[in-house]
Length: 122
Image (spheres, rainbow, N blue to C red):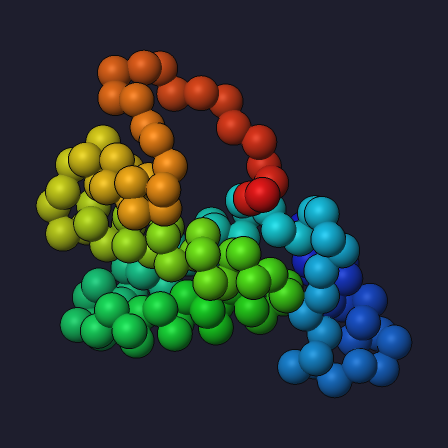
């Protein structure tokens, strides 16, 4: 279980309503593991013909179930969702990654080896 799960269930155990249990410790909750649960959300949306706006709503809902992370639900989740959709629509992963990074104001250097990354989003 991730930090967000431990915090969610601790809040629930303390009598907080489940819909109010998502939490954030200001460090471990804003982590890259929050993106992994988006893969089935995006694949399901891809197969259903949902609009981009509906997909963004789905991403926000999925990232907000157990964690309170604005960075994940409003910035990194949607960017990752668009990256996955681009790949599912046939765009090569390097091109999709470059396009996503540029859309976020980040710089990727094609041809360089993949760097090791931190697990924190910010």
